[in-house]
Amino acid sequence: MALFSRLASFIATVTCFLPQIVAVAPSAVDPCAKVAGKAFVPPADALACYKAFPFNETLRQNVLTNVARVFDFYTFENFYLNSPPPFQESTVNIRTAIATLNSTKYKTDYDFSKALYDFTTQLNDGHTRWFPNCYNAYQNILPAPPITIQVDGVQGVYIAFDSVEFLSQLGTGYTGYFDGIGFDWKRLQGAKVIQIEGQDPYAYVDTIAKTVSGNYLDHGVRVNSVFSSYRISGTDFSQRIGDLAGPLSVTQDSLTFKLIPLNSTAAEKVKVPFLANYIGAPFTDKASFWAANCAATDTTNGVDLKAAQANKQLVPAAAPSPRRLAKGDAIDKSNSNAIALPPRYVPALPPVSGSEGVIKSFILPDNKTGVMFVGSFAGDFDGFQTDVVSTITAFKEAGVSQLLLDLTNNGGGFVCLGQFLHQYLSGSQFGYPGFVSTVRANPLAQKIVAADIKLGLNASFTFYTGDN
Image (cartoon, rainbow, N blue to C red; front, side):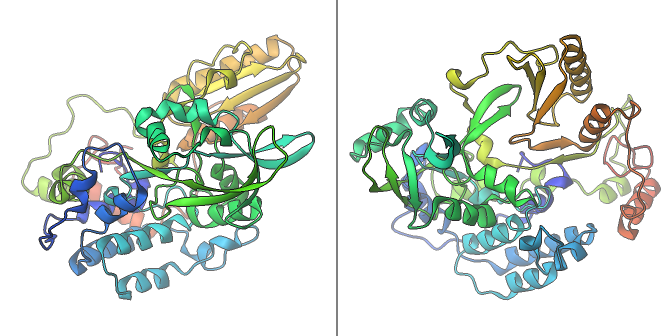
């Protein structure tokens, strides 16, 4: 759980309540030992390891108690009861859903965790997710990542034209598996997709956007995330596998396409196998898998500041800490594979000033259109603002008269940087945008702030303190 260090990752923080009390009956075959130490395994083998841990009622109660308490802190439940157009597909009674999770009979701990994961994912809010590291330890990767692109004036779905160069970066552990089973995945590059699982490709993509993608209320943004496309990883261009070809779930062994290969006119059906990539902590068997990926530790459980204060263990920082700033990251564990964007797809135009960080900006050959690709609102808080100013200044000096703002695969970040960019581009007064709201100051939030003040806490310890 080291990946998630803030409350905004929401339910992800309650995976800390998985104690090392899960007893697993001895078995002649340890399904986790079978896949231990392997970077790539068939999805069925990964799923067998996941399902090696029986359902435990104590764990369910620990998790759901904390899930319910976290929802108490939010103010959006009424929105979900009757979501307005165009967000109706996110409509759900959150408390009824939790009650169902609490009463359903599950065979394994994985089955319960997967149900909770799907529920929070389909809220379509990147700040309201449940990420059990225990069962997000593998990413299923299809050697045929689809894209949507216009060819000869017609929009269609194709297997990425760079799929061989792109996926070969995963190494021979990945590509060699398909060679070993005699599956020629390379010939699928650039193929036109006619159907996926017997459906129109866009209909199937819609299904993935509704059930797998999550993170965004807007359906169109989720549709975009289904496809493979470019993004920023750190401060460099990268390529995202996409929610269809790179899901965290290992429940699918294969996907059947009807497609027309490049340089062909004949349609054919191809059953494309998935291969699961291990992205979790090292393990050797079932017990060590649980210990490394599932069990609570001092770092995942957090700190009881009340108990620490009572025992006089809290020591404020010697120097004032930098002000804690509100962040709203859309957590995407599928980005664990930061595969570089193949060089031929990196913009060849010279970047303008201010392109050293998460913003990459260029002037198109017409010399009047500036493109600002904002890959993230995270990273260097002050540097982001400086880069925006430098970019717009460079555009103005070059005579740019129109701006394309590209937010493809932007995973969020500092809330105020989004506000800053909007204000700066719209010509509003430069400065901290802030928030003027009484809705956010709900009774529970006020009680937390009051309790932190009473405990003598400051921003050295937690976010909701008087000095922050």
